[in-house]
View 1 (cartoon, one colour):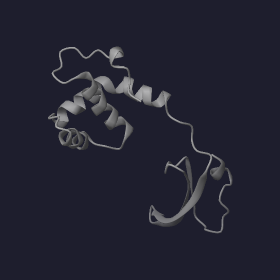
View 2 (cartoon, helix red, strand yellow):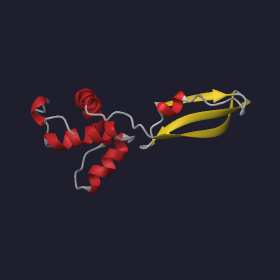
View 3 (spheres, helix red, strand yellow):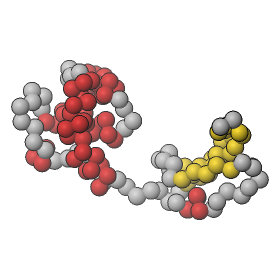
View 4 (cartoon, rainbow, N blue to C red):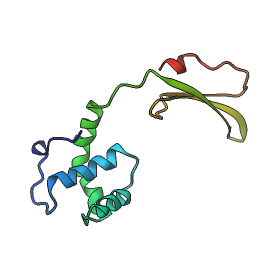
Length: 125
């Protein structure tokens, strides 16, 4: 889950390496802002500023992001197709997107006409 603390140099910091790495991991793993991460850490009794968290993500983020990418599970084989009516550039269109079990969108397509058949490959990705 987390990068090994021994692999990332964390000298001259007042906060423990595990806390810094957990903050950077939260930032990269979930769609959170530095302020959201600050609130989560504050809830656990750790007082750091959002600017400090941003600096940690700049310094430790590339290694943690690479670690998350290596351990990412392959896309689910189960998915469903959603259709949304939307306006793009003032023109009405139909947005079709495949959604897997975890809510990830592996592919999408926009069609001008609704009776255009959806691409069956969307469901297989």
